[in-house]
Image (cartoon, rainbow, N blue to C red):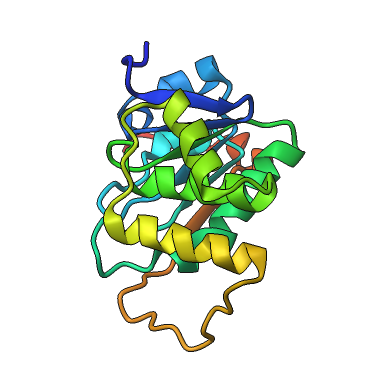
Length: 186
């Protein structure tokens, strides 16, 4: 089964964790995951895992002071919303479930549940004690809190020089059931 620190239940439909599922895709149906949101640039999707999910999205984020994770908030939040609205269950993960994925989940709670940064952070920390968004990501969340309260206007000209496109994989049952003809031996 999953190791003790692999994933934590934040809300019934929202789990936060590390990349363990990527190397153990057979566990996706065991835990009822229908969606996975991978917030890493270094972990490629497991193709077997893709076949077991309704949707898989990779946002290639780096855990450093140069990466603007704010630019990924709405895309990530929409993926989480989709899982929730379809009665699915989503795992949001990065390499260790400590910084990038925690930042996304905290931001999501702030946006969708109207929580303060303090409340969202403490809620996630109470469910997954090892979270520790890097200082830059915490500063991003502080600014995001001001955006949400209307006390800060986000600049329209934001550098996207170090951003890479995300990738979404959607399960299509009509393709999954295709039977390929047998090839005769020559």
